[in-house]
Length: 259
Image (spheres, rainbow, N blue to C red):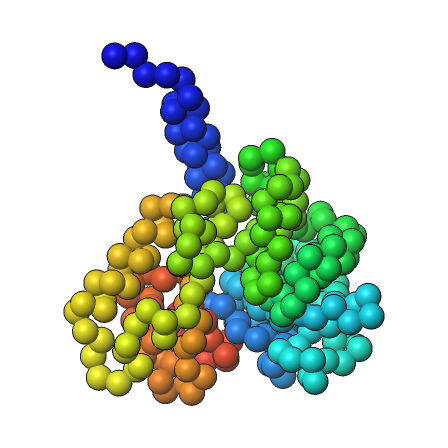
């Protein structure tokens, strides 16, 4: 029986996408709500975090950084806190490869329209997707939160990638679109940092990680406690299970743990 060429083409396409997305592999600390640090961005860079998270809102044509609208200040923009200082380091050849995760709090399409314009002066340092291929540069932008997924899925050329979820089809889509899968720890596991994690949940965690890795994706869990003593218990479990991005609220503390 002779196989048609269509399944082969699909298979080869998936292989090419997976190989291309291998460039988007990161492992290390994820600076959660990085703008809360005494030195936003700078602490994360000094202590070698490989992923930095900034929540954004669109406010009067500016992308302001903050967790809620009452926190917003006109001088705390995505550009001033992150894009501009990252670009200055890039121009000096002093920027290691990292993820800039932009968590869109609302109005996904409007924020993305503004973001595309905002990114234009910084494109030289940005990882790019074009015609099925990924060209990795120093800064890889992942969009989380209110992601305009259909808009981005339809683009043949872009400087952003999507942060997916475990439920639904995100994990099965191309890693050139969804190179990262993130989800709420407390939604999947009962362990809250006390005592030993059960063998059943440890196995479940390892299976989730393996499933993501088989799809050419990296994985992150949020919902990790902020208190350092308890957080370290989670970090130990996550590292042993080969979770790629480990969420922390203290870049210096995590750096000391991860060494």
